[in-house]
Length: 190
Image (cartoon, rainbow, N blue to C red; front, side, top):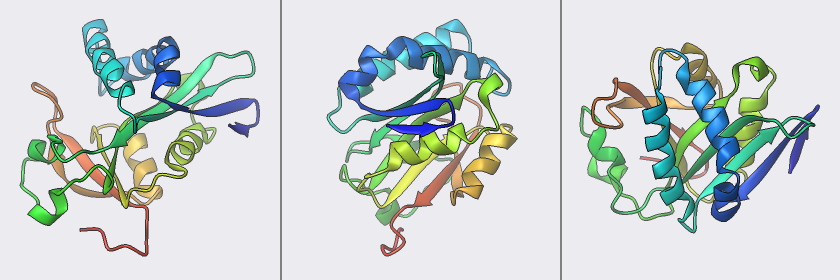
């Protein structure tokens, strides 16, 4: 558990995150209702059907940030990409085969990272990111971000991510930037 001022960030495995689903849902629904995402209640419901499935993965990990009174203020979660991931198939331009090869250890997929509006610009997102990735044995982290989410994109670039392409993460989605972070500088990431 990490403390930052009056904020506590707790790392969770899948079962713990599943028990805290309401907190994750609250943060997600509020953060992604805003433009450019403008997600509806149906979008949130679909995300949390996937969330329930993802939390059953043995490699799933999450981080939840709460205020002193227990109010959820931010969250992040993801898991390593397995050999049958469809993530690479969503890119508009193919990447080399050696880049897309996954074995469940090579790439950690950062599925979501969000902080509620009134708690932003306090370093909570960075703390969530660091807590989530602490101890991850993957060589790199992959994520999608809406290009009109300028603040999120700028944060990811400041944390060392680079854009490697564009994708539509789900049917009907806007085009998103696909960003990659090398987390083991001693390893050459393709």
